[in-house]
Length: 317
Image (cartoon, rainbow, N blue to C red):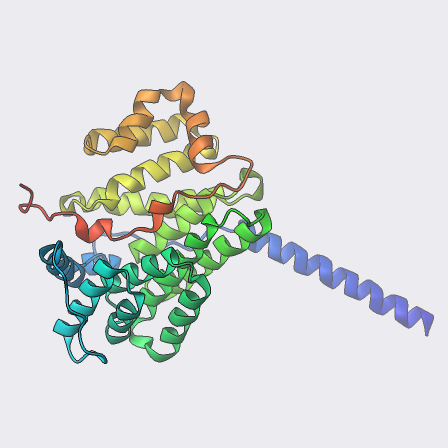
């Protein structure tokens, strides 16, 4: 009997060792990135925000006015836009929730709702609302998961959280991005979000190579589609340069900053990095992204409304 117990115990230990080894290899394994070739259509990157731009234009036109709350439940897109406008201008998250429930795929509505609920310290309610949408709105799963991922990053601002909690929230955000990318392998926002999450992890936890992978993909798309003039393009250059510097490839990271600064001279973060010089690169990245500690990202990082707030080419004054 004793021999049998010892045998079972030995097998259990071996199994645990194998599981630990497998988990470690999975942790370090590179992401399976899609091929970026000439046959990849622009639509594959899921960066069209026509509805969001249109609704934001309505919001701009209403600024300074006293909007009337629309009747609930919402009946059509016009009333959904009215709820969006009323919710943003008054801070009433209930109307923003109504707009999101009407159109879960509208990132303008859901971003405004997430920001309002975070401002009202409704973190748990926000997560529960988004998870309920996932159950009922399968057609818009990627957009809902994107907001879930961003909501987890928003929670990183809580000063009471320790390193373990910060890591758990960031990993939950990464997992949401993983699901998005399983469904839409070229989804640009999914790659950027996953790359940014990994960028803030301590170097010793070996996530920086994964960050470099995703952010390299994002910059490759930005180079191929520079004519789209998205505000996210220079952000990707800055983040990739930061990841390379954090990973020890200082010269390569600085070169990415210089390339981005030349392409986007109006983007101040890139100009500041280049002006600081290569000798200050590691210190600068350490201050912004952290090195050996888990760094909290800046609160504005999750404000993706900058995309549709940006004027399109030909619309600038």
